[in-house]
Amino acid sequence: ATVLAFDVVSIKSLAGIGRARMPGARQSQGRFARAATTLQQLIQYAYDVQPLQVTGGPAWVSTSRFQIDARTERTTTPAQMRAMVRQMLAERFALKAHTDVLDRPIYRMVVARADGKLGPAIYHIDDAECGGSNPQPCDLAAWSGGLMSSGMGLQQLAVTLFNRSQSTGIDRLVIDQTGLAGIFGFTLMFSSSFDTVPHVSNDPSIFTALREQLGLKLESAKGPVEVLEIDSVSRPSEN
Image (cartoon, rainbow, N blue to C red; front, side):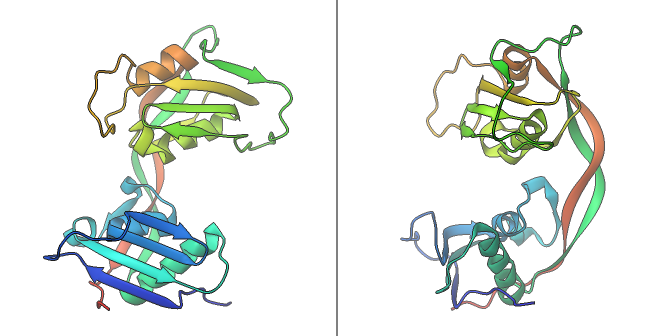
C-alpha cells in the first residue's frame, strides 16, 4: 500500500524562543500547520481520539510545544490528512503506539422520566433524508455553551457529547442506552467553563440542561473504552 506523507515538514521547539508569529492553526488542501501544539494534541488529531483516550509516554508529551508546518502538493481528504500526520509522527517523533480496550469511567445516557417522555427542547422527525440504521446528523452546530441540530439520532448525540468535549465539558465516553430509535431535532443550552470572556451565565450545567431541556440523563458507570497507548516516542530533530 502507498504510504501517504508530506513533501516538506518543518518542526521547531518553542522552548526558550519568542512568541510564534504563525496563526494558531491552519489547515487547507495540502497544508497542516500549528503554531504552538503539544504532541498530545497532534496524536489526538492524527488518531481522531479524545484526551482521555491517550495513555503512556513521558510528561513532555502533554507539556512541550512545537511549531509545525507540513505541506504536500497533492489534494488531500480529511482522512488522508490524518494519515499523513500519523506518518509524520512516526518519522519525526519516532512514535510507536497501539490500541487497547480498558475498563474506564463512562456515562450511560438514559431517558430521565419514568413515563418515557422527552423534554420540551427536543422533537422527533418522522421523515429525515439523512436517516438510516446508524444515522449521521443532518447538521450540527456546536459552540461554547450550546448544541443544536435539525436531525440527529440519539446514538450520534451521545458520541457528540464526548467528541465535542471542548464545547460540552464531558470528559467521559457517553453510551446511548435510551432505546429510542429515529431522528430528533433539538436545541441544548448550558453553562460552559470554556468561555474565554468571563460572564454571568443563567444557563444550567450540561447535566441539568440535558435533563430539563431534552429529558435525558447521564448516569456514571464503568465500561470498555478504546485507548491509544504510547509505547515509545522521542523529541523530534528540528529543521
